[in-house]
Image (cartoon, rainbow, N blue to C red):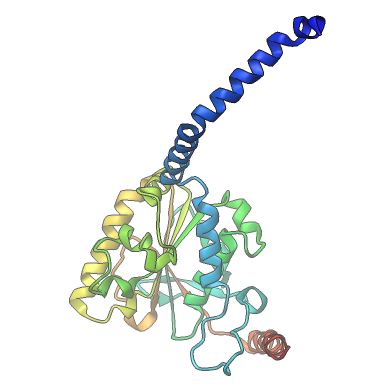
Length: 284
């Protein structure tokens, strides 16, 4: 027994001391860990994952009003998206004689300020939803890797006219009602924009109907872009062709082409398959 204590006494004593210290420090240690976790969360630790999940939940289905029966969800956008083709525009006038380009080619230019024009229902908003899915990785597309996984930010410009809405574009982008999250880490979006490689998607300039309010929104966009363009971010605004008066004169403009017969057939086919799948799931 004496030999046992001689050989192991120091180790046992250290173990007892650590046990006592553990009991004494348990509550302060837990408090310290909780404080550290709150500090990490305030800096945005883990927020991007939650943010991407919220974006995908909000944008992953096709947005068409009044076409679905009760209990049947709208089709998944990634399954029915038909690639859009565009023409470069000058002052909102499409260059019809120029070869059309695919939607991803708008990211080929060094100029990162883009306006996408089109007729009602041409697919402008749908394209922005699809870009959200691409840049969050919900849809596999080589554009995401080519642009080095930029952070997407999406907002509807008409929401700036709501009485309860923030009075800045940055505020709108991080508004819980916009991103469908209760809390955003303080300064998170500003920090990410200043780090660069973000894609800001601003939908529906024409949906701001009041002329004076639209002028205010255009001013907010210009102020926002002037603040954050220097860091290498992308800015994409959509607007109906009829509502475009070259309000953002330093933006490149593209006009969405109407679907050709092959596009229409392809869209009907994939949409029909998706609706049948949704109905089958609803009836199970």
